[in-house]
View 1 (cartoon, rainbow, N blue to C red):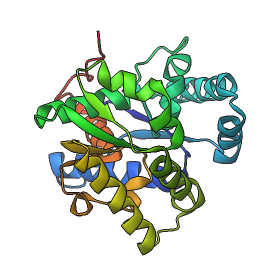
View 2 (tube, one colour):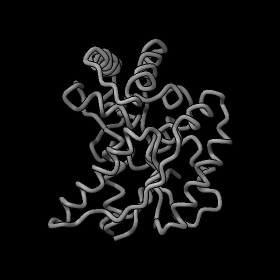
View 3 (cartoon, rainbow, N blue to C red):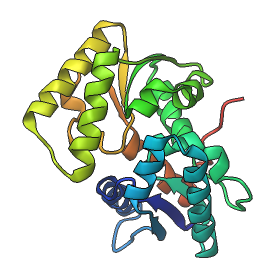
View 4 (cartoon, helix red, strand yellow):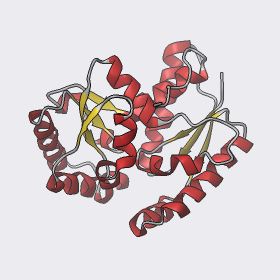
Length: 238
């Protein structure tokens, strides 16, 4: 079994989910007392969030590059970046790294295409929904990506940062997300990506009229399958 290098802390609420899902997957596949071989590097999200807010993405990329190299030095065989938004700096994270990054966008795209979906709605932070780094990665896999209206993007982002990353889950926020999801489906989305690792703390498949693609779970399962040698790394876009 390969050693999974989890680069988390963005937020630690979602990193808990990664650790749980990875180990549940290993137990399901191997049974008995088996658990995942993992190394976890957890950053201080307050520092990362400040870099996001100030637009200091190069600084954030340098910090995650240092963290990824620490995982490599600790014995990780590959890196799982436990956040959607920070895949904006995936290229910088990989600079000089001697082990591969299992890119969340590639794992998500593979699952969407396997489900026969081509037009998909995207929920995430304002950075993920509004900037091209994530949408373009999915589009390069042949997917048509829809994002919510500006008003809905603001709502989704606010709930993530004001509530979910702090472990706060409100029924009224779940209803608000259901409305956003319904509007994406009404605009033609054949499925919806839960493209922020905290979103799965709030909504599930039962909250959407179309199939959902929970990136935390998809990423964790892809990591285990690669660690166990049952699949190769998801293919990046050409």
